[in-house]
Image (cartoon, rainbow, N blue to C red; front, side, top):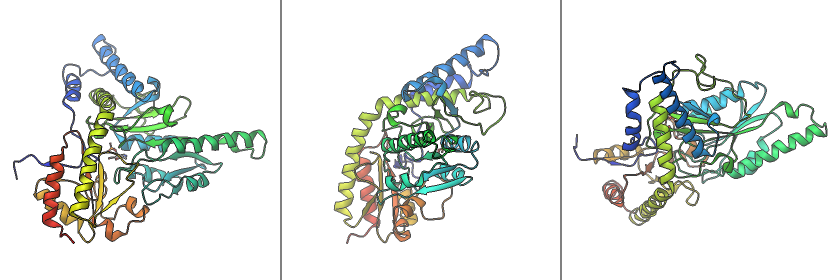
Length: 392
Ligand SMILES: Cc1ncc(COP(=O)(O)O)c(C=O)c1O
């Protein structure tokens, strides 16, 4: 294996743990290993540290500590949100977008689910979304930013639609048009796993009732994360047992993970504006280089409403698996299709929903930058690409 440091361009799949996060976590693996539920003083100290981590997370989301449930990552948070709500309303329905992560789509399919289409930029069609919501819609789950193409979805506008639907239900109940209208609550959940490094996470500004975050994308530990659940939202646990996390997520707390997540989230939110500015510059440079060196490349996803670290590119006529390997051999680590699912033979459901042909999907790569990325990384990748892509 080449001993040179690889050029890592797959930050949407995984981020390295920040040194400061690692230091914050370290004591909880050894000296401070006690179970926070134990009764002795030393354990109570750990419980206090966990409480502090919860408050820190709550503060960053503009939430109350009681609204934060620590989970083992994004998949669990999404499952808890969907199953935790929907299992209480078996005859209710759920509306999701066509570009959601599998950890939303798979649990949604257990219930009566509707899929809101997206336009070719990957953003949800708000009119169609509104039409799909009826009197039995209990949950709408729309991601904050897409993990494949980086499109940022209009969470505030969606929240307003749901707000209006809620008000309509109340009005129709009062006028007795629909007696059962108030039998179903309507909640808004967002999967914000890809958003936390760059976007505002203030829950009430966004107007969300539930929000999923994970540590593995924000320079924190994998298998850590939270589900924000607004006060008043009734949730049923999906993991039963000892009753930890207000009985919503049983199991001895991953104290190091929670401390690490809180520290990572704090850093990510402090750094987000400066990092967004820096990575936007790199992104613009990358787009310019691609356009001038390979004029027939297509950038997928929105150019305006886009995460600053994502570039999803179609190189027409190129086999992406082969190109991925060629890049890997040259020390460049990137992704084809979704890197968040472990095995993906099928062309991406996200690209399909955006109207990208399967042929173009199989000629597409995702490059995602992060804290260590520089313009030199872009020069390196463009140089290697020029060996494998013939200029037209
Ligand atoms: C948007 C999104 N949601 C959910 C997940 C799943 O999170 P985790 O791997 O922490 O379970 C990922 C990535 O893996 C993601 O990108």
